[in-house]
Image (cartoon, rainbow, N blue to C red; front, side):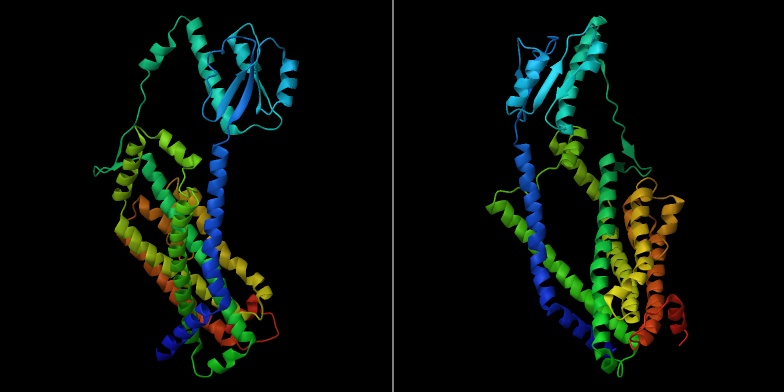
Length: 435
């Protein structure tokens, strides 16, 4: 154990003192916030754009309806034909030409309205114009049928189904979205952490192997202890870097928002859609979100996130270290990386396409017990309510598999770190396990 602590400290200090590690620790948050601020700035510029649309209404039915908005201005054209209107629109700096022909009935009119523009117009703009025209045509159709559109609007009843568990706990559609968002964020974070720092462990093993430093170290330390020390030391370095990233990103986002006037928390189209679909005001919407957050098992989620995150990372880190010991260069690792990454990719797909639809189905449950996929799938299932005993069984299987993988990886590590100049095959790796 004394050797293990020394190896952990050595690996940790070697990583955090590395120039590239220090540079990327401070440069990555700057790049991230810079890109985020640029996107926010471009979005604000796009939202401030006012589009002018020429309107040629030969039917005369919509002349009073083109009032415009903060983003769209309508310019009505009179005493002209379609060809002249198109030529005029092309010469002017306007977004396009909306042509409404004169027809015999409203059904024919609904199919002959045309929008002319230099290129493909935006979906949001066409959707807004189309909704306005559709509402007007429907109102005229009701009037032709002798019905008052305003009276019909008042008679409409919107059904809002209340959702409750059998224990009386209120739920909502927004809550399901929040649970999915948490699970997806947790799975994606683990996926990226494994990719970034798993490769770091693998490169560290390859570097020591090619520099022959490992031959000196292995004379006084058991391979299993050395492997475990490298994994834990690199993990601590990764956690240190990750925490620094979080702190720097929060500080930089605050600075960007305060001094440069870029709203990095500006509402996206998706958020606007969610708010629009919610009942009542924005205050009611955010109150619903807070209610759903408080209804989630936060303590359970926090504890299990830490356990599955640590267990999943250590499991895959052991595999990365074994690959690093088996090869002489990074170019030789490609043949071994696909079997390692496939379960992780499969877990992400199962989580996104299966858990969202049926979090308690047989497929979701099976993959939440398989150690190579459980860190992602189980984390996505827990917000939807998973019995504690299932979570404990899954965690126990994960750490038991980690112990087994470390034993197997140490076998490969013991032989591989002293093998040079030959690319091992899967058959040879199996032989190494018998030594």
